[in-house]
Image (cartoon, rainbow over the protein chains, first blue to last red):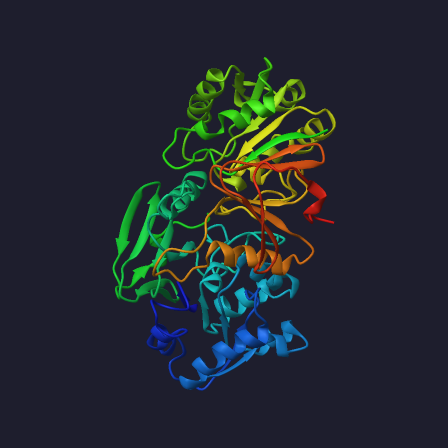
Length: 241
Length: 241
């Protein structure tokens, strides 16, 4: 019984950090007193202390305790005793490498999928919750041992979805990048999440939360929409076979 | 004696494919009759035949022969007999994976660095010419065996450089992404190339070609400019130690 909240972004428009997600977080954590283990490994240009200082007050204001994993001498023990796990955004490659370095990839996956502890991630924290990091928007600044990730969600997600490309620039648009993914991985589909939206997972069902529908990319230039607040079977979307 | 032309992009503004680079290509190939081996492995959403059909007329019009590697039954033999090598843009991860699959990474590197055959690349073809693909802008749609690449240029390049980020979007700007690279790899520097510009390498000297100066990123938010058409010592820029 998996319970997961995979958010596109930490912010929506000009709102404060995670402000748009208050209700989404309560829906996952159900107002229960519980201690969240925060994993700040995606932070690169700021410290883990600084990251915790941004995130902790948000969760405290919602009535939840939160402690960053970098305060524990043994990250494996920290994950073993966590009642919920939150992984913040930043660089997906740094995040995944540090998760492997700490030897907690398989353990987090097991605890979420088989012991049902709630998982929430945003941006890079959503990327690592999927089968692999192949649909991150981030720069590959450091090499993880593999692109394979937590596999809490059985298909790829593209967070921070935005259409088009900057004016006067000849690089790829987001749609072109995702078409490349779908072309080179023809057995897979993916979901693109606009900023401020999320995929909520309850066991074998998903629900899009937020004000915009999600895009269901079924192949190159083959796009359908998934309406918000309407549960669907997760296996409707083709993941890694 | 390395001779290489590493272009930021295949296009500048609304000009035709490689049109901005005519003089840059002649400077590398010196109007000598020679047969260029073209490597189209970065193409994902279009075929190798289609890619060759775009590139071949450009080089023919400049007086050079060009044949794509996919017409050879043995890619290793093709690289061994090539008089010059050109690698086109597309997806950097697909490109590097296919170079490794064809077993030609080390061979191209050796032929360019020690047998002095001219190398030209644009976009993804410039990314793979550096020590690694850690500063590509592309999506990691498929996993290569390693990020290590041709190492023809001894430091990282960021092609298609553009400043800032789309309005109303909370993803990282290009500067933020490159600051992440420079933070997590503190012993390295890199060069960012605006579209339409190139790094020309002659042995141990580099020259920026095109109408805009290059950016020399020496650390997070530590940016200097390198003027066009003024040779500089390549070892001025810190690469992988």
